[in-house]
Image (cartoon, rainbow, N blue to C red; front, side, top):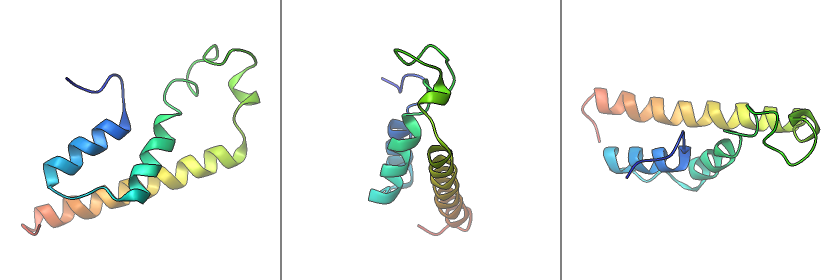
Length: 87
């Protein structure tokens, strides 16, 4: 059974199993925060009332960018190690 849509938490768990390395609490929290943006940030009718702009602020986007950058850097580091044949 696979992740529905783009469930980053489940994808992160698959990645963790594949590289046999724990995600860590920080990356897991980042994936959880990023996953919450998947539908509401893209669909104007995802919230019971108001537009997405009434539910999202500058701090939300800054946090999402920081989370995505850290997750990407973490995956990149592991990818590099795997390419070098290191665990």
